[in-house]
Length: 294
Image (tube, rainbow, N blue to C red; front, side):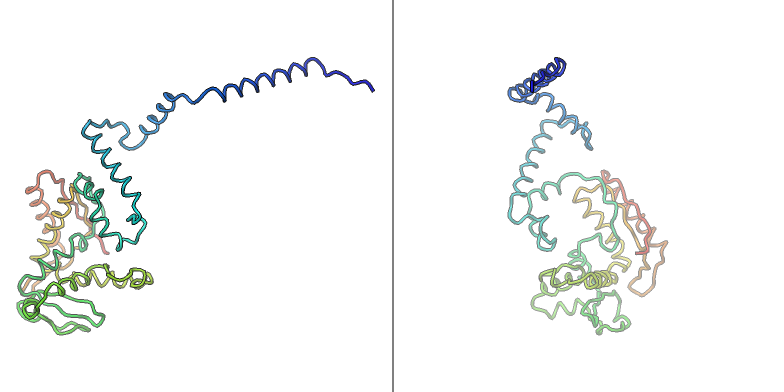
């Protein structure tokens, strides 16, 4: 049987396809992406980020390069803090050069701060509990309660007899252990393995609530209430935070003689202390108090 030749049109199409394929192969083998076009695309993408249109000065670029260098070094460490439980990572964070640099840099605002959690507990223990007339008792659940009074306060249910801390410290050889114990009652921090100490959400939540109950008798003492808010603003200011919004319970506060102040008094105290702080630190933008039930 005699073979038929393909039509001329088909032959031309095949030749054209082969020619295009050859050109494509030659192009892929001899050319590379335009580096200028690639750089323009990278710059365009960067311009869409927050602050993408900001231009750094030579000094700012030098700081940026240094920060990136420190971050690369930290990421390369075997004990990378973000990969660890916070309790284990906390001492590493505090000694981190990146954290030290960021702490010195100005920030905008802290927008969700709770009133009873805005001051370091070390200040509460080493400042407030050393004030005169500070009493303490220990609950059945091994937590602590505090109260300021000119004489022994009324006995609380499920709590030991009140002890005047000034007298207790006078009898102790090493008050540091006592202070550390008091601080441990005001935080979730533990020297144990946190996964073992807090095996469930119920356990950690109960300890969380007890920590706030432990500080309540200190913070709601009227002279401390004023100082506490001022110290809270001071600690944020030292971290270069320029504005704070506080979720506040506006609790009933009390005086040494047992008299109490209502919610409007607490609100006015916040207002007066905030205004005083802004006068003392004109570059601080201020504070807003937001009433909260929890």
